[in-house]
Amino acid sequence: MQVYNGEDESERARFLSLSDSQVVIPGTHLTTTYHQLKQTLVLCSKEGASRSIMRGAYAYALQK
Image (cartoon, rainbow, N blue to C red; front, side):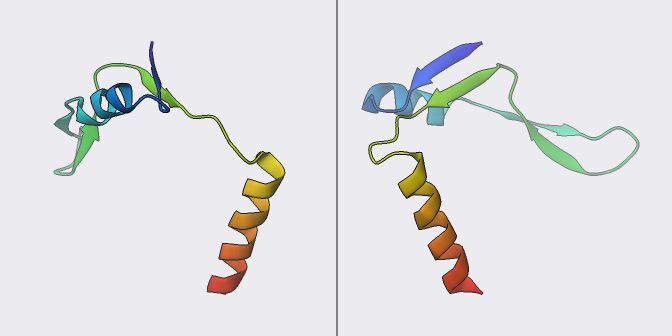
């Protein structure tokens, strides 16, 4: 598995530029995006999980 540092601009750009392909779902005419390599992007929270969750809950409540 390839791990990319989301805080580093060059690694983030490389992660976002990786190619993917379209594959046909067997038994249908539908297609989906497929990434051949296992990869993940790691980011660090600068304000902490509690504050991030609070902001997400607030944004969700405003939409309702």
